[in-house]
Image (cartoon, rainbow, N blue to C red):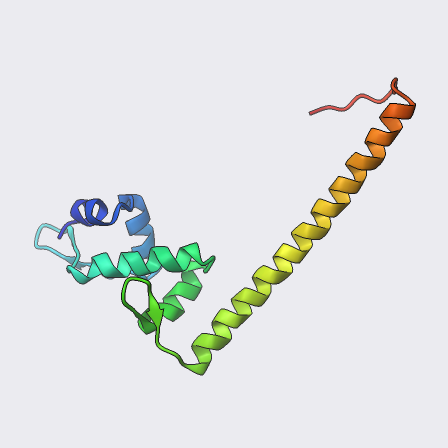
Length: 130
């Protein structure tokens, strides 16, 4: 099938499909006219890529995991390297969430302190540019 048909069947824009190809996640053949030709199995591969992206994985990580993917969910065939990669990604996400939570709390503290100052000193000489 041509890229337009794959796009229609998966709901993924053609530029995204080309990006997946550039990242080595999809490997279309080429017709005699030079057009990309995807096998029917590409529909499942695109579904797997999309689900793995939803999990917060990078295309590089997906390239590593995709050979282990089965089914549309996708299910992953267990192996130590795969679990190590998934656990490392989860740790990185947890660290990022912790950092965001600390930043959120700090911003909340600034707002709270500033609101208290506004109630005690309603007129302030500072000008904030947005």
